[in-house]
Structure formats: C-alpha cells, structure tokens
Amino acid sequence: MIDRGVIASDAEPLRSEWNPALLAIPGRLVTTLLEWFGDIGEFSWKVARAGVSRPFEWRELVRQLDEVGSMSFPLVALAGSAIGVVLAMEARSSLTRFGATSLFPSAIVYSVVQEMGPIITGLVVSGRVGAGIGAELASMKVSEQIDALEVSAVSPYRFLAVPRVLACILMLPLLTVGADACGLIMGWFAQSLAEPLSFQRFIESGFKGATLNAFLPPTFKTAVFGMIVGLIACFQGMTTTGGAEGVGRAATKSVVLASLFVILADVILVKFIMVVFPT
Amino acid sequence: MSTNETASGETGVPSSVARNGTEAIVEVEGVYKSFGPQRVLNGVNLTVNRGETMAVLGRSGTGKSVLLRLIVGLQEPDSGSVRVFGQAIAGMTLDQLAPLRTRMGFMFQHAALYDSLSVARNVAFPLEHHRSDMARSERDDRVQQLLAEVSMEKHGSKMPADLSGGMQKRVALARALILEPELLLLDEPTAGLDPIGSAEIDELILSLQKGHHMAFIVVTHDMYSARTIADRLTLLDKGNVVIDGSFEELKNSDIEFVKEFLKHS
Image (spheres, each protein chain N blue to C red):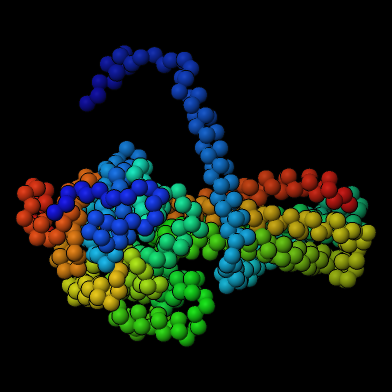
C-alpha cells in the first residue's frame, strides 16, 4: 500500500522555471511545415511535367471526369439546394426587418453565385473526392501497385496524378454551376412558399444590372480549388507509408488539408477577383 | 565457388562482359543500404549474366527484396553502384529508367495486381502502354496465351479480388512476362502456393529458360524450388553475400551459416 504521507513529504515542490526544451516544439512544427511545402512543391512540379509529356492518358481522364463530376453531382446539388433554402429563410427575415424585401432576389443570386455556391462546392468535393483519391492512391501505394506501375515503365505521375488533378480542375467549375442552379431554384422555391413570385421575375430581378465580372470569376476560381484538392489528395495518397493505418491517415489528411487550403485560397481569390475584376 | 564476387567494369562503361565471356546483365558492386539506423545491405557484390538463373536466399530481413528493388530502380543505394544492361541506374529519372524497365519483368511478393482492372487487363496493361501499335486482336491473343501458360486462361474476366493468393501470383507472373523481358526479377514466386502450384511455377520458369535467353533473379525461401530452377545460389546474411555458387558448392561449404541454413531448409 502507498504511504501517502511519505510521498507528500518527499515530493519536490513544483517549479515554475522555463523549460528550454519547449522552444524546440514550434521549431519542429515550422520545420515540418516547410518540409511539407517543399515536398508538395516538388510533387506538383513532377505532376506538371508529366502533364505536358506524352502519351496522355485520355481513358483514365474520362474515368476520372466521371468519378469527380458525375459521382459528385448529387451531393453538390443537395448541398447547393440546402444553401439556397437556408439563405432564402435568413435573407427574408433580415430584409423584412429593414424593409428591403424587393432586394430579396438579388441577395439570393449574389450570395449563391458569388460565394456560397463556389465555396460549398469546393468543400463538398474536397470531402468526397479528396478522401476518395487519398484512400485509393494510398491503398495502391501500400499494396505496391504504384511500384508495379513504375516497374512497368509507366509513370505514376502521368497515369494516376495528372488525370485526377485535371479532372478536379475541369469539373469543379461545372459542379459549381450545378450547385448555383440548385441553390437559386431552391431559394426561389422557399421564397415562393412565403410570398408567391414567378421564377422568371425572380431571375430577372436577381440578375438585373449584373455584369459577367460578377459571376464568371467566382465560378472559375473553383478551378483553383480543384487543383488544390487534386494535388493534395494525390500527394497524400502517393506518399503514404504503413498499411491500413497509412491508408486511413492519407484519407483524413487529404480531406483536412484540402478543405483548409480551399478556404485559405478562397480568402485570397476573393480579394484578387475584387481587384482584377471589379463589378 | 566464388565468395562475395566483385563485378568487373567501371561506372558509366556500357554493357560489360563478365569474366567467363558472357554478357553481364546485372552488376551490383559494393552496395550499402540502410533504413534509419538499420543497415540492410552491407557492401553486396554480385553479377548475373544473360541466360543465367540466380536464386537469392537468406533469412527474413536480410535484404533480399531490397536488393531486387535496387536492381529495378525502385530504391537507390546509399553507396555503391547498380548497373543493369551496362547502365548505372542511380540517379536516373523515371523517363530515363523507362527504356531499361521495359526490358525487365518484376513479380512482386504479394502480386501487386491493379485492383481496378480485370485479370486480362492487368496482363495487357504493359502492352497497352508500350506496344500501342499492336493490333487489339494480337494483344488479346498474346494475353490469352500467357494466361494459358500460367493456367489462368479461364479467369481473364475476373477481378483480382476474386482470386486466391496463388492465382494472383500466376497473373503477376504473366504480367511480368508480357513484354518478353530479358531480365526477370521474381520476389518469392512460390511463397504461399500449394506444392503443385509451386511446382507449376518452377516448371514455367524452366520452360522460359529454355525458350528465351533470359536472366532470372529469384528471391526465395524455398530451397527445393531454388535447387530446381537456379544455376547459382547466393546466400545473404546480415547484408552480406555469404556464398555464391551452385547447390553442390553450397552443400560442400564449410561455412557454419551455410551448413545451418541448409540443415533447416
């Protein structure tokens, strides 16, 4: 049995001195971060070089376009629809308070098309596609399928990474258009339940005075989101180590990092679009 | 018997000729390889000539598979040189390695079949990428012929997940052979196979030896298989080549580790 009295009396008093070893922690974090950026930079360079060298993997690209585009559409449409309904309810409540209900269609159109549609699509795709690509490639890596490609003299960058990254870049703007359309339709529908309004009036009013600069750059900025999702997921998958645990880790890291960088990129791109494409 | 033989030739010199006059396909010279603090290969030297079959034996973790991966360029040595078809492969890019790799076949220990492709497409995959000028019917015939050679001709439409481990290995062997390589690297080809399956793989390797002037490097624990198929056996221990010679030479060796290994094989 433990003699608590003895322990209490023998125990050294707690010291509040600074432990220099703690300084090493942020240092290690910075080193790890810089290493990660270095590694993904090198990986991106290899993918870019593979992308412009022949032969191009058309069949794999078509398969990935289907995987990233068609397969993601239901989820993106659902997310877009939900955003449209929520925005309609929120906007109606706020605009009624300020007596500006005539601005309702514009509020919905601008909110959905300029920001909510693109970012929601980016995040949904980074979750679904990022996890899928990360897990698939990690599984290929740990089961030596990527090594098998290499020894067959087929570049894994050209065969695996290029079609996936390209599919993400091409499909994200299209998916965004889909999400925007669903958001607008459901926003109008939610509004119509409270106060009947024809869809034609809703659209005419919403887009009144709008220029292409207001809608095209926010839609096409999602190509950058696609590049981020594709590159991060391919990188995490193709560089994973370990067995099943490594596959899980790669999938999780792909989603977390892709989502994080999509949000950060959005902040930068919104400012960039404001400066370069003023409305 | 030659213990820890050193290949002749200097780095950068094209296709070299071994002492006995035959062409050296693989030359490994003074190769060291570590993973963290663990040294796996400790100055390995070996040469494999055209038309020769070498079995690499040794206990688990002695660097046999790592040696194969170094030869095919999947890993790089910490020091020393690896030359394949007379070319030093260290530092080569994927594109530079590609012409050499199309002359090699590699069968992985766990088959490493592409799980999104059918058996037939797994075998056809290297052809699709490197013989794109080949007619579809000709390609299908070649795939079917190779699948028949490994007794898998009825399973071409199946997916790898539907096959047993032994069947996957046979498909992997067919895939390794599809480009008619000059050098075939086999990592544990008979591990996990039943005795009949092992014997079939051995017979297939023997028939390939007769039909083609191909070099084989076979990593195996199966002494019976090694004895059946190999001209030379190389025994590794602690990252070193302990002995390199025929089975008779191994049997007559006075080296304690060789005796111990043979006793338990």
